[in-house]
Length: 334
Image (tube, rainbow, N blue to C red; front, side):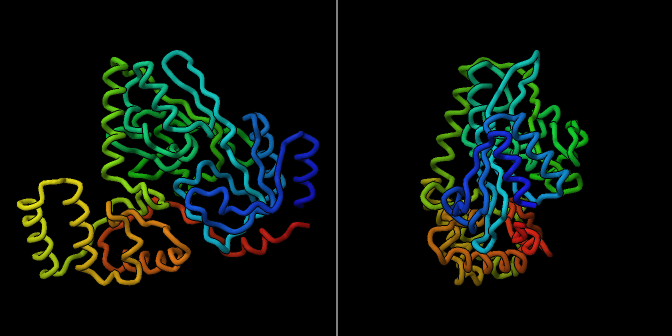
């Protein structure tokens, strides 16, 4: 089966590499070894390749920047298709159409410069359009579900257009992320009917960038928020201590950034977090950092802690791993 895909790639002049260590490709330097790494340069080649794989029932892993994906080190998929060279953008009337591999931060700059409002909060978002429309990404008031008009996907070898309503967007998820519709994103259409002076949008974006640098993790490898809608169950004593700490720091620590860091660290002391405490970012319990090779083991404890003490928690990142019989399927390279 895999020999068929290699023949297809060669016949269609699509470049690929063999035995690629995913640690050299993924955002947080994790993952096993991809048997074949493919990076189509044109959307039409990407589409034909996906159709071929879907028709042949060939298991594929389609990725963009992987800034929201945690590849486990024992996960070695046979076929990884990267969208990072698929970065065309064009305007048609009151919409902008982007390839799935177009960077969201570049979309924000394009819209800000042209006075298209609603995108300024995406200025520092590291992901691609494909990932953003699946995850319903959002930051600083900009939200995918507020600006996307429709998304074109490939499902069972055929193109299908999903409208904003059909995508069933909820907080940080969609019908695509839930796998209720199993398809690969080709492109997305964004509304640009809301206008504002470019200088106003660019000024807002600059403020958001400044805030990111102060209040978000930049020192260690991370995937942003690991969980969204995270709420914890406090015992009475923990609740009292937490309130006291907030009041005390509000009164005596005037620097907002320092106060925020102290609050995070005090929270970690309130709970049994010894096994993973050093890997939680100073900027929030939602952000886990992969600062060394022991982080993977610590992440398991971190997950267990969240499940035990959170009254509500939604996993925002996607963990890439073998599921059920996928390992056997992945290792079949006949």
